[in-house]
Figure 1 (tube, rainbow, N blue to C red):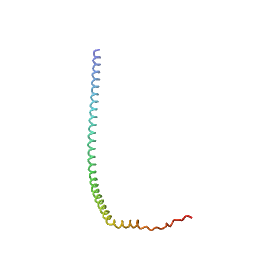
Figure 2: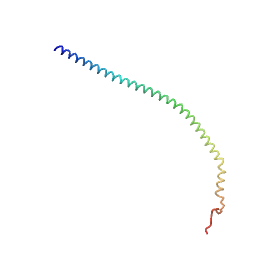
Figure 3: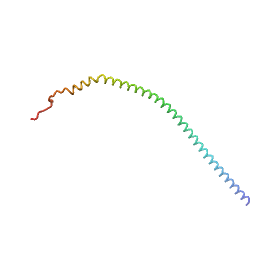
Length: 118
């Protein structure tokens, strides 16, 4: 009986060691998963920062050329305003004379579509 009791004790101890090893393996697996997740997050952050940097560089290149375009458009607009202003001052007198003559010189006449009432 003692040998059976010893055998049972050995089996129980072996089962306990197996259980401990299993728990230790689960802990290692959990740590490894956590570490892998942290590494993946770090890699994703690094990739995102790299792509954002590339985007900012491209955006700066494009916006820089747009800045040049806006300066050209501003210059062209200023030139067009200057031309229109000079044209206005040059033609203002003639136009006022034409308008006043058209308004003031009235020649009353019957409209061609007028039909007198019968």
